[in-house]
Length: 178
Image (cartoon, rainbow, N blue to C red; front, side):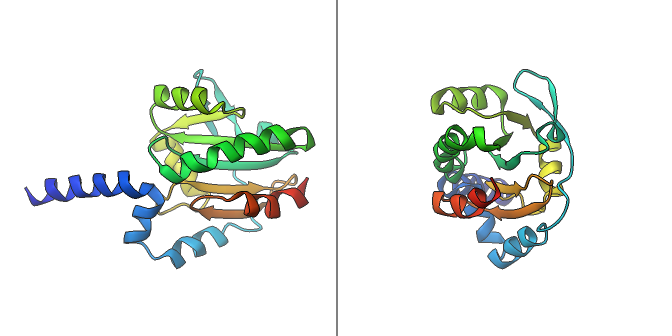
């Protein structure tokens, strides 16, 4: 009975604070930052995940572009908050070589509905356990969402972070790479 009660409390907290905030309650923010920083100056791992149409997509298909890899879910408040900014930046800077790639750790229909509602204009990959494994390859051993990784044109990781990306931070990191 206690474990069921604890599970309900955890789900409630996840809904209230989103994935990243819940992880912060049970993890040290310094550990999350250290895990993200450990990814810097490493070659980005290639992987394949299915898109919403069920086609396998290779991360390497976007080689040569500045890639922003964003792991997220529709139920995650910080993920939902940063998405319109990603859509805007893709629209404004895509012709300069910027490519956002979403990795949704969620149900296909919920992701499609979210994309339609927010006008998501960048490729969306989807998965569950397989997407979580890819996130771990990129340093997210805590399961934090959102988890964002910036890869330069040479395929090197130049930024990784758990938590919401602000426009100011995104501009500071991405624009010099274009």
